[in-house]
Image (cartoon, rainbow, N blue to C red):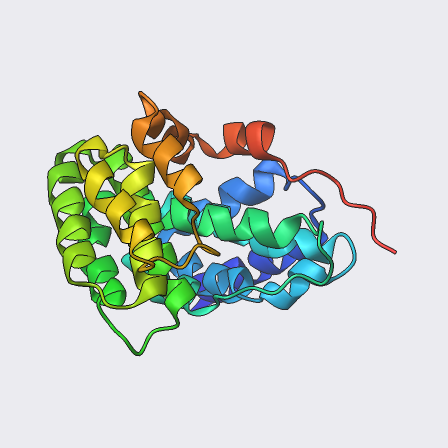
Length: 242
């Protein structure tokens, strides 16, 4: 109980951390292990903070990245439940960064994430954007755990062959294309011609480019970045807030 209270106080300090948290504070939080998951998850999913002034706006992203270091499957459903995320203005930076990294932090769980993610992908009661992000997370799983690739690709293709929902079909195509499954090219282009794909989610040109680009999965390898390299490579950049 004392440890839980202490790590909870440490996590609260992330709200004052600015664009990059103190390494000593991060080490303290991660040393708490499983006890840190719940307070970090509470902060990571407080996405209204992403629209607030500095330094509070950075806190959900810090918490999200630290969850990616702890390896708990407890994070999967709560993170995906927050979607869709609205923007306060067109060029707002932090919500899209958070959204992209949520899929990566889930993907970092590797094979342990596969079954829970399929359960969300297949559940029609879930918000469609959350189901789509679950597909994206499966892409990242295949990089963390390459032995899962064949299973994930087969699962996506099977669901694509049975999908009757244009939005769901689009999310599946997005995931398949990011994995560079060139063998699916002909069938996917046919779905576009038949009007069975929501092109607001993915256009045929984007799908074509992804499917036919050699080594396209290299783009997914950012999921492997260590924590501090992630800050170096992905920011966040300091935003000017009015």
